[in-house]
Amino acid sequence: MAQLPPGIRFITSFSRDQWYRAFIFSLTFLLYASFHLSRKPISIVKGELHKQCASQVELDSYKEYAAQIQHVRKPLNASQCGWEPFDKSNYKQLLGALDYSFLCAYAVGMYLSGLIGERLPIRYYLTGGMLASGLFTAMFGLGYFYNVHNLWFYIMAQIANGLVQTTGWPSVVTCIGNWFGKGRRGLIMGVWNSHTSVGNILGSLIAAYWVSTCWGLSFVVPGVIVAVMGVVCFLFLIEHPKDVSCSCTPSSSSKTFLNGASRCRIQMPTLNAKENGKPQDPEMQHLLTDPENCSLSLSSSSVATGEGRHGTSAISFLGALRIPGVVEFSLCLLFAKLVSYTFLFWLPLYITNVEHLDAKRAGDLSTLFDVGGIFGGILAGLISDRLEKRASTCGMMLLLAAPTLYMFSAVSKMGLEATVVMLLISGALVNGPYALITTAVSADLGTHKSLKGNARALSTVTAIIDGTGSVGAALGPLLAGLISPSGWNNVFYMLMVADACALLLLLRLIQKELQCHADHTLFKEH
Image 1 (cartoon, rainbow, N blue to C red):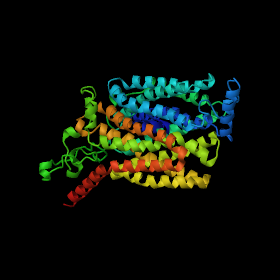
Image 2 (tube, rainbow, N blue to C red; image 1 turned 90 degrees about the vertical axis):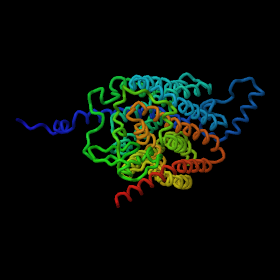
Image 3 (spheres, one colour; image 1 turned 90 degrees about the horizontal axis):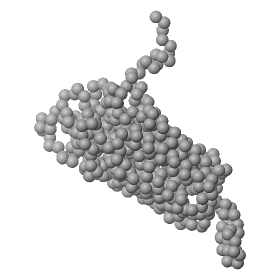
Image 4 (cartoon, one colour; image 1 turned 135 degrees about the horizontal axis):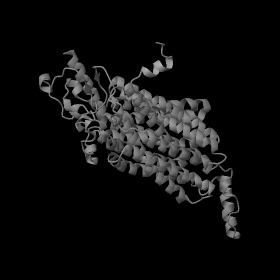
């Protein structure tokens, strides 16, 4: 018998289950990257919607004077200072209103999206959302081609897009949570969550390509891409491994997996609390860092196997809030996302003002923040898996992020080289906690042992956490638009305070994780 070619040997070295998991990993990565690809253009186009005029005051004065003495519609071309109505002196507030309308709609819609998503097939729900998102993203760009200068047209396009984009996150996290177990979840989801930064980078490059010549295409092209990916989702997305007769969790050896809310031991002898002779703190029994790890006990009901997918009812909103850790991580994400989305929507304009670059070069340079975010998300997942402490990992990165933001505000004025370095470091520290909470932590809490295998709860838990974070995402760009006229330094002070608040909200969980670790160490010594 002839020897198999190397390529065929490589293919057959992986099981059928492994190929399906790799496919779902890649597909959901691309699906949500396309969502972020469509969100980025607005930050790139801001520099074109309002161009810096050398004599803005004189221009406004002349226009007012001419309107009084002559009955003419426009004495000067509004495009000299940008695109009407964003060519006025209050352009920062108007651009901030665009951000706020999208993010506020996204935050409100996210709370409903998880509840709806649990009750509908994920494939249909996500496909409909992506097709609608493509439509409304392109609609914003059509304002350029049809010469639309009504502020409400652009605000309504943003509101509609914000609402339909809420279908994305609960759907893809639920799907990836169904396909991947808890072993190395932090690392796997850290790599997977880089779709956020990849989407931002691609969105920046696509939007920057047309921003100076035809900014309408900066929205139309991403809109078409999202719609096409919606069709791909309808044709290929598999919601659950059971749908193709795959195992519910990746195969593993008989080891202990210590990752997140529900720590699972397989084929290991167990001791109950009574045999251990050590009373357990009731709160510790449900902490994200699975306190049973401290007493080395495990009941069969604590392993979330997903068997309840069809046999259990969807969890209520209040029921999801009662899962230990959901409230703390949700509020922490509010402030973490406030910082991240302020950078997402305002960084190119900040670079334009500070470095005096055009919109295209500023957009290209801003992608370095997302490159840093890719490494930050992976690093956060890897560290949290190694330390087995999600909250402590987030707290450590938040503690480093605040002084880094201060350094960024000072160093970025010293030249382009310093800005590049600080963009990479800031991106890693800002996006690391955000990535970890929205992926591994959400999946841990959504499959918490207190749910007793109710796999349908994951979508609601994910929506609550990300929805609360989206409130901060809406507030950040709005506050930046209001504060920036008084100076960019004040914007950075606001971001540092937000990071400090995020850290404070995690202190209780960090304390519990450290206490659990100390108890476990003491138990091993005895």
